[in-house]
Amino acid sequence: MSDVRQLPMFPAQPQSENDLNRHSALKDTIALFQRFLLREGKSQHTLKAFTADMGVFSEFAGDEAALGSFSTERLNEFLHWMQHERGVPCSQKTYARRVTTLKVYFKWLNAIHVLEVDPARAVLQVPQAAPLAVVLTPEEVDEVLAFAASLRRGDKPDARPETLFRLLLETGIKKNETLSLTPAMLDRSANPPTITVRHKSQKDVYKERIIEVSPAWLHVLDEYLGAYLPKDVIFNCSPRTLEYVLEDLSAVVPMKISFEMMRWTCAVRDFRVGLAPEQIRDKLGLSDITWNDTYKRIQRLAAEQIARER
Image 1 (tube, rainbow, N blue to C red):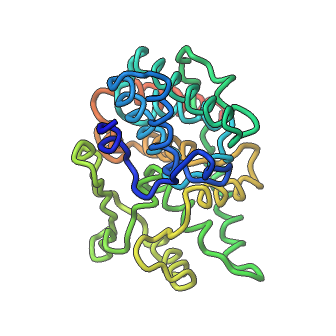
Image 2: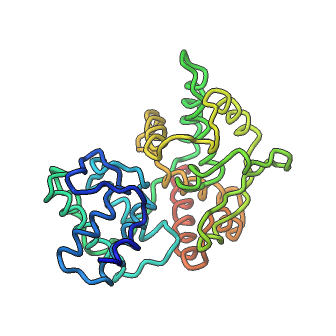
């Protein structure tokens, strides 16, 4: 049992399964899940592998994600991200094991009556080919920008939607990168202005990059900063709150806007204005391993978009 003390990724865990409920945070279940695995007779190898898998899941969902917020759709989004967007190779063997981890984890939560329904039961065990992404057309981008601007100037002015949308449109950065941005990462003196995307983990050092932003975005950002007064990071809210902001902007387009959609939209826009492939790769912070397939998808998306405009 001594090994269990070394494995938990998060401090201050609840003391027993009875302390958990659907509002408990993901991070507060890891040590108890490990104890459950030991009671089930799992080996130390399995224990470490499942703990690492939960770390990847937490990377996607956020440590503070409530247990009751997970649906089958959300878990499938995680598997798609892990396989096609994370930027780290994921073999079929690894994919299958992580699906197993999810199934064991959520079956456990269901069995101890933390969750009434097991969202992992319907998750597919076999990795699926990634469908071509949905991206915003230039016309749809203009419509969303106009809507976001109207929210900025409404009866209850809110600059956050336009600040977020413009940022993702211009930079294509990921959700976790967005949440990590600080005012110190802005270089207003550069021409054009830039943001520096940094990562805490040494293994993600290749993802660090400098991306140009427009003066128009800085103008909206200053309105947002003046209203929200964030102390450290620019977006001082939960990941889910930012997802809701994007979903609210979907009111003027026939699809749900997401971080993934904005990342692909940014890439296609850059491709269409003639940005070199290597510049797009650097901007997105992608490794050589994943770039070949990603670039082919960008080309196909751009070609389909151009064909529809003719």
